[in-house]
Length: 168
Image (cartoon, rainbow, N blue to C red; front, side):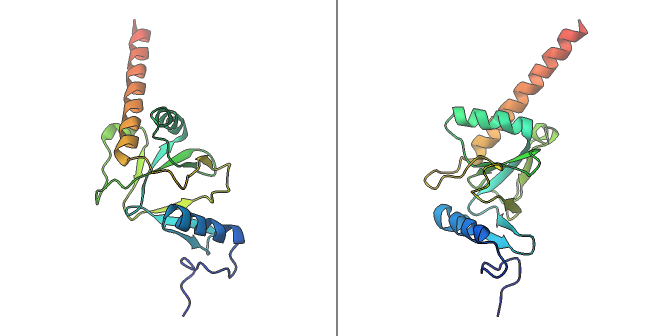
């Protein structure tokens, strides 16, 4: 009995690089990555081992720099058009995730627990802003959200000051 195409991890029609990447994620990082052979990509579910926040690129750049300064940098990858950055975090620990309104207005999205992520192979250097490291813990969900909120708040305050200055 053969598994369906979305869970098939054999080499039948699957690029060796993709198979290697799935093994790397599973064995070296403990991530539940599987091969979606129908779409020739790697996917994993959130909630048990990790969670994810998706941010617009400009906000993602600022959040990544701030996390790095606080020694909380973790894996971050870009979509194939570099419009959205996905921050991988330790599990948030909740069955549902509700982001505050200011984050939703800033177009921050939480991948829901048991949601599915498409993950680039570790060798895709053009897609990884910050590569996953086998001996490094994922940053806490709460820390990534707090840094994001802080940057969104600072940006909103800066915008309000600019508007007030122009109104005079």
